[in-house]
Length: 393
Image 1 (tube, helix red, strand yellow):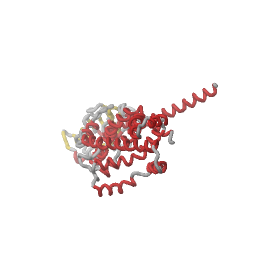
Image 2 (image 1 turned 135 degrees about the vertical axis):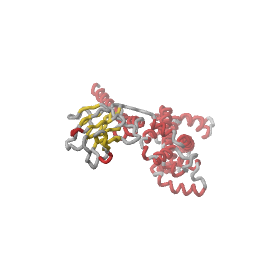
Image 3 (image 1 turned 180 degrees about the vertical axis):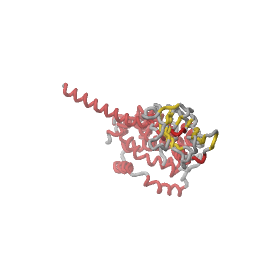
Image 4 (image 1 turned 90 degrees about the vertical axis):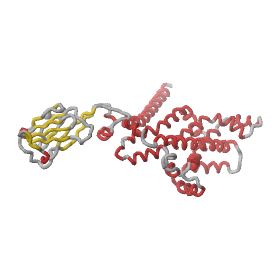
């Protein structure tokens, strides 16, 4: 008995550890994406999200102006310039100074690098041959020498920039304030809601018919429907679009509703048929004895009992339609009154290639509604999914 209990405990522990590892493997990238969505573009370029909660010290290699920019002033030759580009918001918290081994460049480094000292911003640093360099916190510098500078290319300058942790909603503001994003939200709801309700309604009737109604070829027809699950939808896009162009519903909402309904029906019928077919036969037979028709049995008995399965498929279908890009590109236009959220975000990223940091915030903007739907229906999800997959009689 103790041996059986021990095996059960070990097996339970292993399964829980495996489940924990899966949760961690899925959660960490999502958390990293969320942290990245709150960071500045420069920080995203230079450091990973895991360093967002600590002070970052990043080295930058710059170059001082050439010798031909020098001017003579009070017996000294002076070069005035900016280490950072004009208009840059970069600044220095601290820097150190000294000559590189080759003797030709100046470097500013942090404490932990041996052989270099720290200087506060704005403090003149005396170099060899009487040269001095003053680097200010705003990035401007003054480079002086008692003799004329004779280099043809400005010396290199290595700076360790100290950046404290900082987070903001700027990326989200940029996405939400972009033209057409709010309209695309409404358009996505216009596509997703009917494209979720229609296949559920049709599949529920079909599932009841396959489960409790007798008609010739029922089993073979069900097999054909199930076989459609493995057919890639990409194969049907062009033929379906040609049909739409012929009957005049291309680039319209009814067209994409019908497309999503057709693509979702095979899986919906499979899940709902297995669930409805597993309902107690006594309930159905009692209703028939009382004189109820198939429609009355379906509406008053089967439909209320099938809420878990309906909710399970509703989650699948809604998430798939909400996140869809390919079908929307094919069957809808790009006008303001039709473009969906995924297409709008794609255009936003395409037209602003230099602002790729909004990709992280766009991801979270697009998953807000699916998360609300999932957590609202999650109590039905596992129960309906398991019930629809275990018994397939």
